[in-house]
Length: 131
Image (cartoon, rainbow, N blue to C red; front, side, top):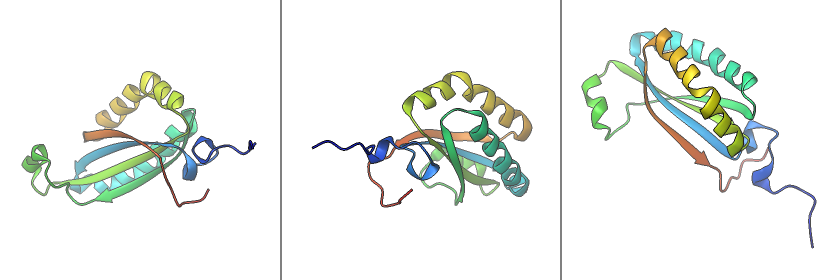
């Protein structure tokens, strides 16, 4: 028996069901964090409207990550932010990495002087969240 409905991981219509999360972790000077978060909301919205397949974005703040020795020199001077871009497909992510990522990173770095502490690509394998 065959079904015409797409498999849950192939739906590409919204951030809630995008199969790929492109995660960017940042440290920013604590005294600039409030302004940076305001800027980041507009900036990431722009990325999603400009880059094919970027269906949505979420921004999280977090306590200082534990166990990352290179952050120990920062003391308590930084705030930590995680951005989750929801991406519709691997092809869309590959195109972003090839055509946009460096420009986006340089623009952000030159304006704010923050440090990207890591990037990860997460692939959805199971979710109880409905679209």
